[in-house]
Length: 140
Length: 381
Ligand SMILES: [Zn+2]
Image: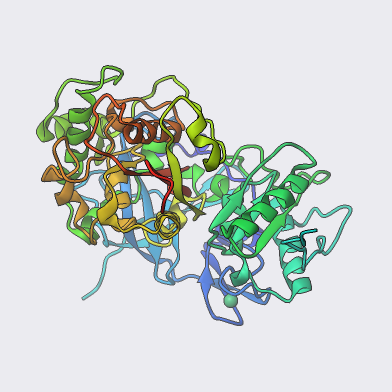
């Protein structure tokens, strides 16, 4: 599966999400962590949705994740050259995000729930770098 | 003279006014909300009712981390918030919620993250979901199901049996769009839309409409039709982003909404004669049966596959044929309500014997919101 990165809908950052998109531009996956209750959350907002504290740290996620769920879309989309998985991945830090899966067959046989993943970054357009995920080799 | 039943105990505006280009519209809602809560000496966990216009109450509640048991998204322009106050008074008086937060925020000058539709490129969905190729409900509503199947041990064949069962009901209904019987194998081998969902497990796309008229129960006997009484109702929201469901195998909104409705009606599951669970896709009745408490964890798939919800089964469900076989115009909830009314009146095409209580459960968005209505043939509860 190939993605035509010129055809991907381009996010427009807001003041509350600018740190996230600044992070992806330098290869960091940034989350937020509450200084009061220690909860780590996503998507970005300048207060903790668990306890309403406005005392927040920006942290850099490890980039390690696992495959939580997915569908494989069969209909054509201008950014994808064939059937493609839309995935939900759970980061090591506990938050979940949507993404696509690169460098892996887009088939039920290849995409096994809970398989280890790692983040990888791809620029789309001038300003935005998107976080994608690919299989992670686990050393035993 | 009677005393007022409801009062305003917290009120505040955003920290800044004027030009606020460093805040998106939803953050303006949140900033005002946090300030009003501070004014009231309350925390977000005290709030169980959310009303707003301009943004969706689902979006505001999720952004603030609130699980509401009452929402109002009445949007009639600049006076919407006066209407929200009025509706909040009624809701609190009725016991639907205890503490209502009404929010407004509008990036009218700076136009930052200003919601037109939820898919605006600066909305949270636009930033964190849309880039990854979602193409509406078939690729988003369906996203949690592989996790559900794995966690509960439910099989693809059991999920396919939802479509089989509902086609059996549709076969008895002259107004149903699809009436030809189908088998589990035919469902599984139908054209793939978004793995693991085949066409037969996705709702129809049709045209139609429906309407309801409600009056006070003490007048209901004065009308030509047999009255259908509202015994209990529930509502809730979870998140406008499918990726942010707290648990991919269970709907938080279903659980809150269903439990409220059952508590208000004062009934247990054994009392239910007829059930509607909004089925935009075949997995929704699985989530619904489990989250409403009709089935234990992981039991809904086998329950349907064994025929318990089919004609002659002990819990007749989606007896019009459902969104999969009867019709689905986009916002199917009205048709589920119509079928519950027909069943309680005793005038459905595929009439179930002696329906005294019907539970009608709906979903909004992609597991974003939920509403439950329990109807009865008698006003007593
Ligand atoms: Zn916190």
